[in-house]
Image (cartoon, rainbow, N blue to C red; front, side):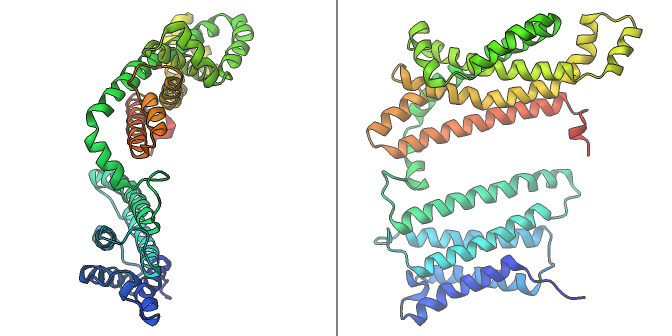
Length: 377
């Protein structure tokens, strides 16, 4: 049987080989930018792994996945160490970019091996689900650092991840205060009020049919209003502190919850409703025992959508008036001061909070709707 060719490994071998071969032909130093022994050792490790994958294209499993990942880590660490030296900013040669592209192909193979590794153990399967996106995210951070340093990108345009991490570590107190003001106060309170009111009104609309014709078009109109138009009005109504931001979040989260809950309540089949009628069940009993459980996937869909909308709405609302604290205030203020690294640190906090919020809602959904067909193996 004909043995296949590992295309990512072939690309890695060609590019990593060219990383040292082309500069030598051109009469430059090894790799065209560094003759550090550690860098040459990392080149050898990455090249050996690429060749090994070419010789064993069908080899798989956790051992191969971890070995390939380790080769990528060694190569990435060596390039970052070499680029941190004096005179490296903006002076990367062709050899660097060939080596980075070769590592990219090797990282591709590492992620594929990790995702496809046999995982009979449930714990190992969960580890594989986390490890693959972790490798991808770390690779993007590495590529960001290398591009900024190698091309000498000015910090005012795009700071390196290392600079953002330094500012983040030095500004934990400020970032924590902004997080409390924006997320804990404005986002969570507005999220709860908006989702709860949208759910309650959806049940009311389902019970009183004429409201569907009168209320839904009005709700659609409100949902189409731009945040930049609502936020200044809410600031005038509720003041500069967090209540005005919560009001914006309520407006943004109300309509998605209303529409999704109504769709979920209407998704109950006629057979289930007729069965409840044969048991002489009234509206409330049918709603609680049949229709609301069937509507849970729709409700959680709205909760997940609103988890991101709420954070966006609160941050944008802070651009139009807020005390001297908050994520939106920090972003707008630091941009004016050209402190772009602090802006990115605030964005990182917002992204982390939003992702954790979304993940928490998804975990609760999984615990309450495990019976849904989408979760069946």
